[in-house]
Image (cartoon, rainbow, N blue to C red):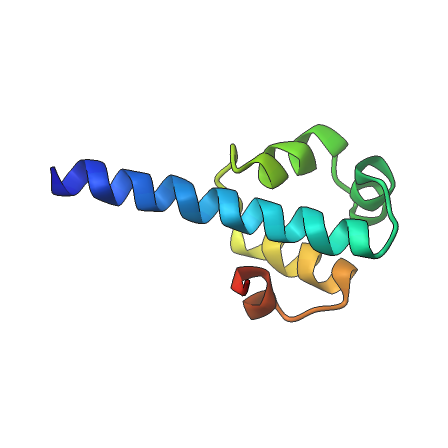
Length: 78
């Protein structure tokens, strides 16, 4: 039971992170494709991150945060 709860929390965290990235990107008025291109990444990979379907690396999170003009920690705030 604990393992299932941990998995649920893990997937919820990835989804919340993705939603936060998507929200911040949209607030800047930038399309997913444009933003991904500015980061040097494929827009499909960014889509997977925003949907919570990717195990994103810390260096990628740092790049995304920099592109959004925020600190990495802010990607995890509501």
